[in-house]
Image 1 (cartoon, rainbow, N blue to C red):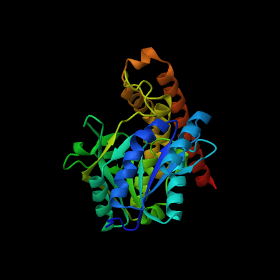
Image 2: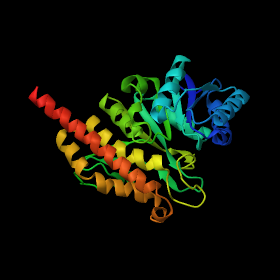
Image 3: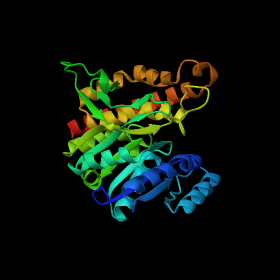
Image 4: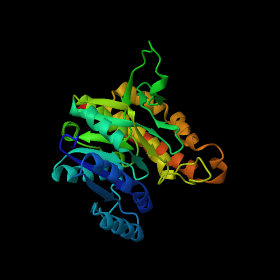
Amino acid sequence: MSIVHGRLAVVVVNYASAGLLQRNLVTVEQEARAIEQDALVIVVDNWSNADERRAAKDIAREHDWVLMEPEANSGFGGGVNLGVTRALAEGATDVLVINPDAHIDRDSLHRLASATAASRTTLASPMITDSEGRTWFAGIDLLLHDGTMRARRKRVEGDTQPFEPWLSGACLWITREVWELSGGFDHDYFLYWEDVDFSRRVVSAGGSLLLVEDARAVHDEGGTQRAEPETSRAKSEGYYYYNIRNRMLYAVRHLDDAAVQRWRRSIPRTAREVILRGGRRQLIQSAAPIRAYLRGVREARRIARTHTSVQKGRKWS
């Protein structure tokens, strides 16, 4: 007997990672259909190249998945919007959005479904580990003073600095009610921070966030965003650029002028912190991190400058 509110859909946004679909999504589908026999699988294959598109078509055909084929790369948020919209049109009431380099077991799916059954305006996420059992996501807080991140476990009782919790887009359980309440993802982020933005808009619209601590997903980070998956901590140039850029995009979307100016002043420092997530050795091995730093900082400053100009224009109009 199904424990899902109605029909379950699994949505995966794919980019140049057809091999990961074969390795992970096949398993996720089996686990999903163990709790909902009529579960629907939708793959949004963002365009990368003709060979990858053919591979995605072959895998989708083999497993009878719905394959959506954007002519361009719509980014993660844009891809999620395409997939979830299709899922809801197909009658889904609950959607599991999961990365192609992640998988989840049926017990954890059951716990996510149960957690949201009682509150249909709750956005839920499992705990996420890597394949060796190390914690990858266990709740993260966005510190509103300067836009830095803090692990949920590092909260200190009595700390008065404002923060906003958010849930990772690597694995989310989204009800139809949450989607309609929030309006979906903001595709302007393209990659990274769209889940931070989505979490905030869910809460702002009257919904809630829930980290389901007895549910687990496994995420091998970097299936598409690590520069050298086997030998290096280094991330891709896109990872660095969008994390630097999108911090300021979030600020101008949601914060007051004083906060935007604080975040603007800390752009160089927070950008360095992003780059150093890939370690120092990468800086002597490749120009990509420095290039991403310069591009990201320039674009973040442009976003802040444009916002300031618009605000000044409104005051004088």
